Amino acid sequence: MSDFITVASFSFSELEDLLREARDKFTKTIKHFGESEGKMQPDEFFGIFDTFLQSFSEAKQDLENMRKKKEEEERRARMEAMLKDQRERERRLRGSQGGSVSEEGGEFDDLVSALRSGEVFDKDISKLKRNRKRSGNQSLDTSRERAVTKLK
Image (cartoon, rainbow, N blue to C red; front, side, top):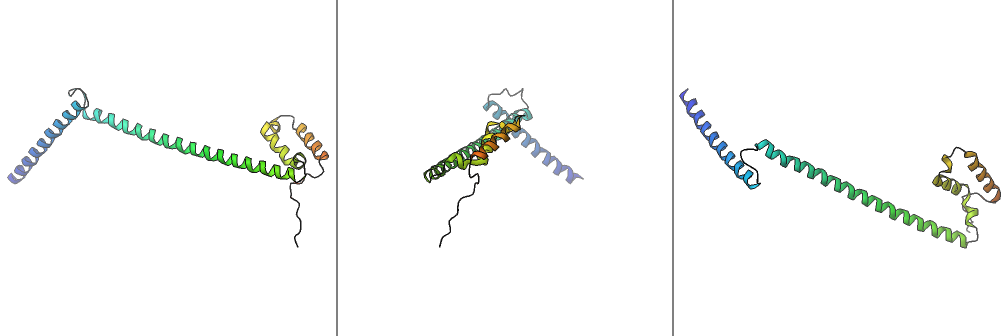
């Protein structure tokens, strides 16, 4: 039993030394950050750092999300511009081949413009249907298919 008491008292004295050293370092740290040493407890002091690190991590994630969103918007804008240029080239090419763009536009283009303008969502849809029928009667070829020539 005396061996246990000797080992336990030695371990206890080591723990007391470690506790004293930790308190001294904590006091120096509090003074370094400009806090009063008697008023602030370790859990409160280190809680400030924990809150800061969490907020910093969230802000970093928000910045990354904003950067990705901006890149996606820029990519989408480039794709739309390329598509618009391609459509314009195709329209000019079709125009130079002789056919009128308004005649070739057909029903599909009417539907797209109606969707963009919001006419489709109006209560009077019959008006849109009448306009489509009227433009369909005026146009000779409403097909969206291209003319195919046979090669020898």
